[in-house]
Amino acid sequence: MASAKKQTQHKSTLSDRGLAYLLSHAHALFSSLGRLTRSPFTSIMTVLVLAVTVSLAGSFYLLVNNARQLTGNLESSNQISLFLKTTVSDAAGKKLAKQIGENGLVEQVKVISKSQAMDEFKAYSGFGEALNTLDSNPLPTVIQVLPKNSLQDEAAVEKLMQELGEYPQVDFVQMDMQWVKRLQSMMQLAGRSVTLLNILLGFAVIFITGNTIRLELQNRREEVLIAKLVGATHSFVQRPFVYTGLWLGFFAGVSAWVIVTIMVWVLQGPLEKLSLLYDGSFHMLYFSFSEALLLLLLSTSAGALGAWIVLHYQLRLIKPQ
View 1 (cartoon, one colour):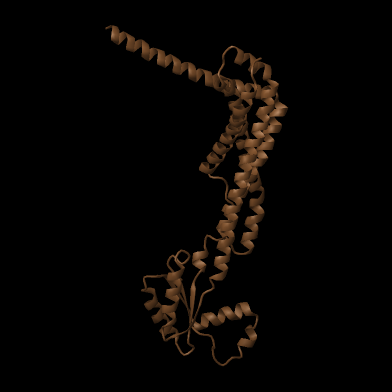
View 2 (cartoon, one colour; view 1 turned 180 degrees about the horizontal axis):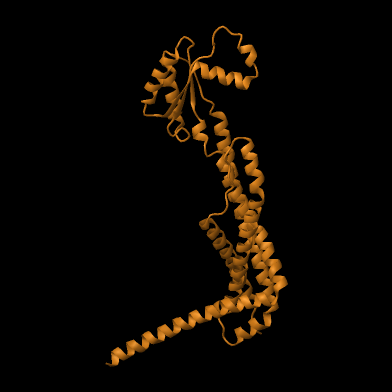
């Protein structure tokens, strides 16, 4: 009985300690928020500076994401064009296209007949009337071949081009991969540049928050000294300051999300109109729920981390005499 009673008392003590610990953190969390509201001008200015920094990181990220839409259909445009010999009829070209379509490396095959090629040439060349004087159609039948996984396996595409060029009906094979590679390289460079820039901006958030907390700590130096004199630990003393940094990061993240959303909304109309003029289907991308949540989490974490780093150093320098 005595053993069971001791176990019950031990569990009760542990639960009381856990509850006291949670209440202590909750008090520090909301008291730090109260301190921010008591100096609204300073708090708002700090949050706005942090928000601009975070919004720069978020806007660069969205810029690259929207630019990737322009390369999203590269695979469909990365097609091999087979120009058949002029002696090959359209019927023979369709028969060859059907044979090519059975190749396991081919995704899609399209045949452009001689008459279709001539109609397109008349429409876009500006020599329509002059072409009407020709006795016969000099343009060949063209077969457009879309390879499978064309952007992922360049060696397979080159091998396929060699195979297609060996057909006796084919005059020559054409595929311009150079501009695709250049555009891909540019997008990779842009992606890495944004990653590096966002890392630098993340450090900026940490430094700005840390400096703000350092000034706050100097203003409350006497309060910290008294707390240390009565035996308060470093973790207890730094707790409200860390939560202050957390609140600053949180409000900066929310403000940054609002700023970036407004920027995208302002640019959406003109960019989509420009896309329609070029027969495109470009639509501006906003932050998804998970991306907005990640932005908020990173901003809040950076604020808390900046505060903790400064406090970890500064509290060691504040010693009761």
